[in-house]
Image (cartoon, rainbow, N blue to C red):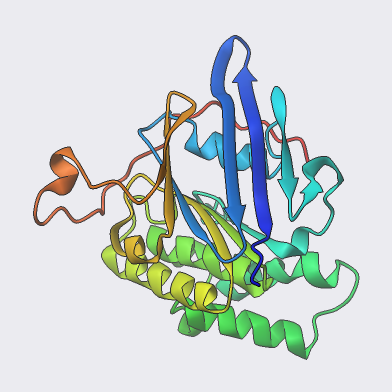
Length: 255
């Protein structure tokens, strides 16, 4: 008998900033092998929910478990690859694409141990997966926004995680990068990976999605099949290549 395992479980999660409530008693469960999309309008709490699940913002109420372990006691961070919205390394940081991707191995091998053959192979495979093998020696600052996002995904993949958490990976990037994301995620899922992603629009990622969780004003209003697009997103030829900056509170890092 096949038994599914909970990878992420948020129970009655609540988050607030000053006098503003962002998440209201949210329940979310992601099981092993699932691809779950968090959908909703700007400011609905999508990004805050995944940050709370990863311990990057504090809960005001409720609880989080990762791989069955309370998040406050979870230490196996090499099992999780996190891809934020923006690289932050393309604005003057003198790092190459390969160096950024190689940093994704640190949680697995440790800071003090030098990289070995397995590390180099994982980095090469991750670069190939996102179509950037030929840019490994290039400075990150020379890449387009879409290529920088591919670099982030490669960094996460290089760590060989069991769970990928992605925050709007295709927002405002070119169609070629969106297709590259879809191929890389498809290969990850085919290898029994689990994915939790935030999206405003799914575009080429939609065929990969098993379940959609829709938030509205900090509450879950739908948990099931991907809803049909509405409004201008349903128009023929809508290309899903325009930015949707999340209107979220300032990040509160407590790592």
